[in-house]
Length: 129
Image (cartoon, rainbow, N blue to C red; front, side, top):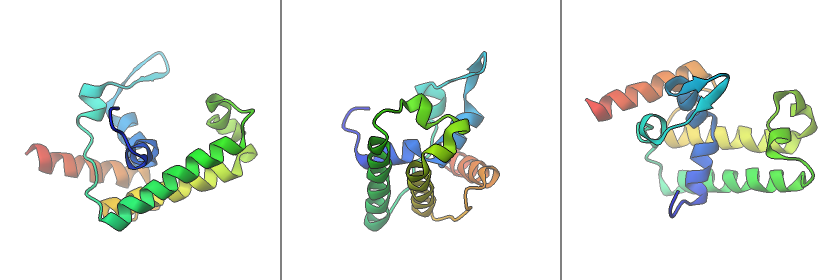
């Protein structure tokens, strides 16, 4: 993504964006088929305050820093649900990022994916309507 910042990285790495992706994208075999026209272009970004944006950026950097502490692990290793207990700092960093992104949307769903997706579809309907 041209001119992307830590803020953009943080939102795209959040449970919020991934919940949207899981609901809007297609699949080929078991793999998600992320497309710009369906997933990215229809995703309604939050309108954060400066403080909320800074918090998302701080948390996004914490995710990158946590990944770096496991320099022998691949991304596949880091994000394999079976390996979750091996990477506690990464899990902690993602939880903080998810909370920061929810705050940027002005909600606190405590990671409840159903509520997150419903909220995003409501925002999409407002923007598209």
